[in-house]
Image (cartoon, rainbow, N blue to C red; front, side, top):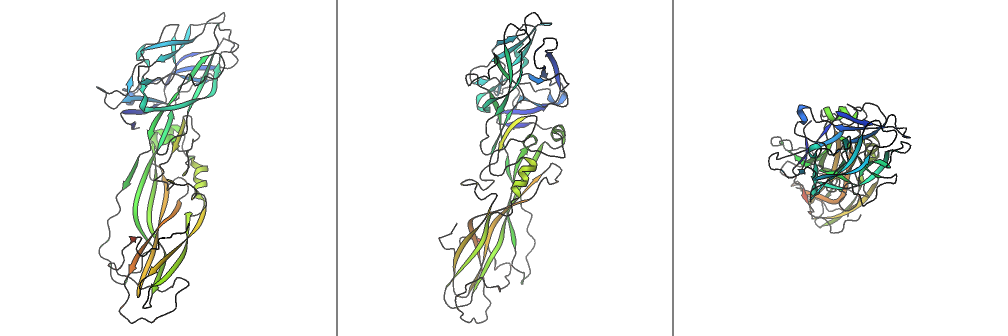
Length: 434
């Protein structure tokens, strides 16, 4: 797959591992195997691991587990990565049941860099400095120590040790946080404290706009008022590990669908129209729906894990957190519009012998795979923050004064293309009721 990029750091993934050590014969209460991520494939030739992997049990994890590996955008002069300056021994397998020398080490990162995981030593010797890389501080975020993976309780080793997983904190809007799949640990069996900080990688959820389809030639007079006019198309790219997809395994997603596209289509939607045939200005009022139309966002979250209004952590071998951009999801000020449908009132003063059409911008969201197929339901959201009015020209026929209308008249003149122009806030009353 193509690498993900955050600033000057490249992130890719490996499913190949080399076994380093397991605790068979030690009589430890729980089994464990330690593995080293492999970057020997041609596609990962310039990538390096961030630490070793601890997995409960003795099964082969090749082609099953997935961990992140990293590289520089600028391989000659890049500063995103640095080798550790030293290693501090955390644990060694010693004691009457030791059948082979084995040790675990904590990298000492250069100033301005952080180590992302522990490293196994073959025997009791320090690992080579080029075994892993440390990452520049601005490319990572604070994480937290998660579940216990293994402890050496019952092994008879002279020193106590426990290995723990790492999970990211809640992602900030517009970003995803990724724990690379390494482990942390400490002497003893207590969960490591904040004095032993752990970290996760950061990624931006890329946003871009698509070009609108080219407009058709001039429309013939007599065309009916358009129900919808496309205003913009915006796309948020979601890395494969941020989306649950019932039809694909994690490995299949990595290989065939590395990026999902959450597409937002904004359209001016006709919600009301008014015709004033009197010689004096008239006040018209309408009621229209706002917020989420239906509650399909719940279905999207249940199926895919993607949450429109909050951070989410999908079910996945990798530990991640993701959060959509607030401008993209219309939740910059409040998220209360999602999962509920409300109503809003609007009033407009229509000059004598004028007609207007009222439009509301509605956003349609679709989650698409790399092949263009849709995953989950389509969502529709009307913010209700702004109503847009278009003035329609009256026919030349004489008009007759009528009483002030209480409801929206049904009859509206059919506009030509030149008659209809959607403009924000024309003839709108300053008061928009929530």
